[in-house]
Image (tube, rainbow, N blue to C red; front, top):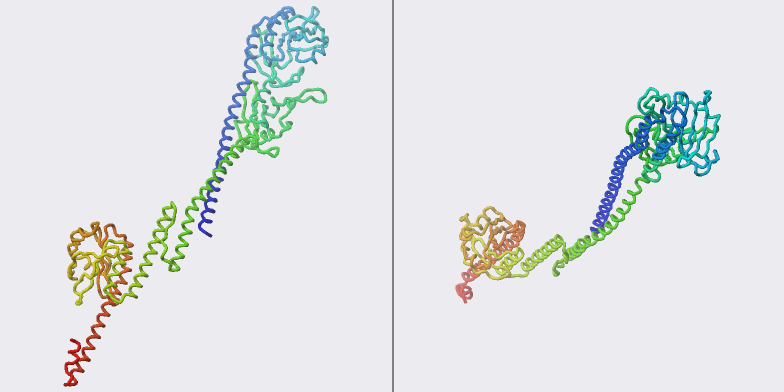
Length: 609
């Protein structure tokens, strides 16, 4: 696998992994936050519904508290009671939740006023559209007979009709609302039930009059409560209901599912299990209908629901509960839309990142491919072309420079080898070797010291500048016994040594003039000993640098010093061979001169000639 393929694959995988992680964490975080917010919303909605329910009941209790002091509660005749109709009708008009207003007397007499709610009632009693109120009365006549009558009034309380109802028999004294108020001096609220006349669900609030002569009662419908429940739905598919502890429905957005008329014509309230949606029944089964606030998740109708069950005090005298259920599909729909939009944006950003990454990878891999091609040329011993890459990647430029230095180094090694093989004058060869070492190490100057014939001192053989120029500097012979000199220390310890080019170090080797001769004052000195194959010291190379010497340069110089040592050793061997050959010739010539008295000293005279 190529570097480009590896980098592209890695970058794409990392970008996709980061994008996927961001989307996953974003979706989960949004859902968790929405769930927490929904639970808080459940609590808030419960408080709102409780307050709205109290606003339905509390005004009725206030009106009831005022009417217990009204004259109608102590009136003993029908005419006096009817004279209070303006007050009673205004109470009905002021509160739309009031269905009926009635007074029960100890002797069994009864007075009820209610509004005509629909045209069916007008048809039933043969009334026109102007009839607004029905007043139902039950009074004792002179002979003690209970007489029932219906009176119909228009909006201005003008009597329109009176109908006798002999079959209208209603004894308030044995009714639950009357009995519950006998021993109480405050309003009494009944349990929710179905009103016979309208089939609506409501409650009865009753209270004994201030004179204790009668009991006054209000029938309050809970239809408005169903409207409030409808308004609490957070999503179109949400389910909300108010139920009693046994599961009997009090309020539900669809009133047709709250009550049902039996075959006998009786209107009865429905149980939560009768709802067409099974989710609220599942909530009741899983969390119960008693205890404190509970919430969680349920599965119903092949969907996940976030649900809540909490007690609700709405002033009805009985514990009721508020049930919420919100489908997660609808609840998280907005979240999914947001995540989808974010996903599209992230995808576009990922594509942009991939494109930019490809450009960056191309900037990296193109110089690497070029360098690979150049290295193949080096392997084929093609050293003529300089190695250079056109890129802004600093590391690639540094690598190209390093490889180019390697090209130059190898090329110079080969040049040195060719010079050693071609040069017959070993003095000239040593000069060339020193020039190549200075050029390869990129130092300022260099001096080659050779040991004298006795091996007791280091004698300067040649001094050179960079670029193959001669270095005219006065240098002295350095005895090997002078251990303070850098070249001697290097030879003694048989290793390269570099030091700061202080005046003291230069003076020890007689090179103090270098400071004035060189263009830049020397900063460091590097001495490398030369040993032959018998590990005998044959010389020392001293390099001068105007900057800090890299440790790698020390090792490189040690490698180059081997060539110089071989050349010096070869020079000495050839010189010794020449001396041996000349001595051998002189020996033969002496023998010839001594053999014949006629030709004696002839060879000596010929050599001198």
